[in-house]
Image (cartoon, rainbow, N blue to C red; front, side, top):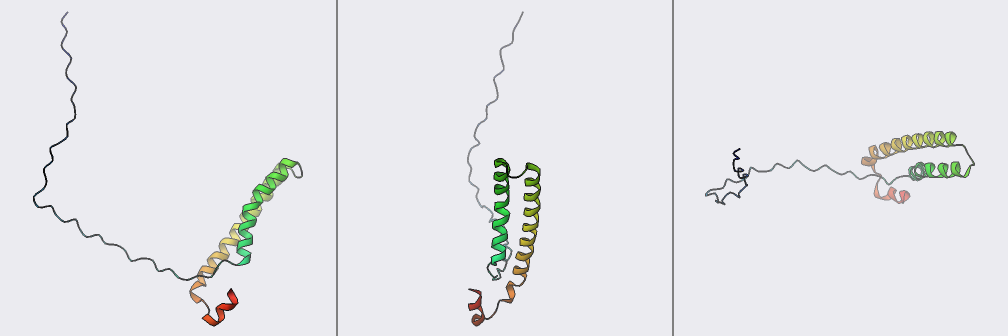
Length: 114
């Protein structure tokens, strides 16, 4: 029985570093113009209240369900419907506020907004 000697495994070697004689300049980078930021009004009290209500409805109703004041299925359904309605109304108010943001009142009339 003759055995052949194991073949050596190929090993990777770092290629020699050769600096280029005349490196080409990279092509110019075209940067698109920046988006113009329009001033918008701050969120209204109703928007803030809806954001708070939609963020608190789930923890409150889960806590009430754990404590036994309300059943699980009614708690989930109330939380789901309340959250969906509040987020949709909030989204509508935000879109309306942003659409009207370019029509800010004069400086004299802005005092009423603060």
